Length: 173
Image (cartoon, one colour):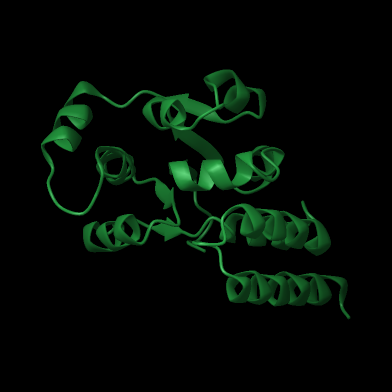
């Protein structure tokens, strides 16, 4: 995880994973790890998610600038309009981009934008004693069950070992 990030910008795939598992995790991240921002255009992309749902958890819904929208629309390559927009906003504002999208992660690395995987934010919660390892693992299992294509069994098993180890170290066992 980047050194104490100030602002995390959520990509649609991470929002969807937590929407289908435990959306309140993002509120915990906002309270205990870093400020969480979500682009209004990304919120509109996610079925069943409204700005009020994000704001209720303390997440900040932000509007991209016209300049960012124009730049994202003119980009070409493997990224979608929304992914380009997420990259541009994260780059312009020095936000950490939280995404599971491999193409977006690659583009972020190329542009010098810090990145996190969707499950990594729960690792930070366990480190901060804001979430129990068992709860993080249960949420990861639910994410895996609804998104087996991108969140593999091996990934969840590795995550479970990591958060259990963090909790053991924290408790001195």
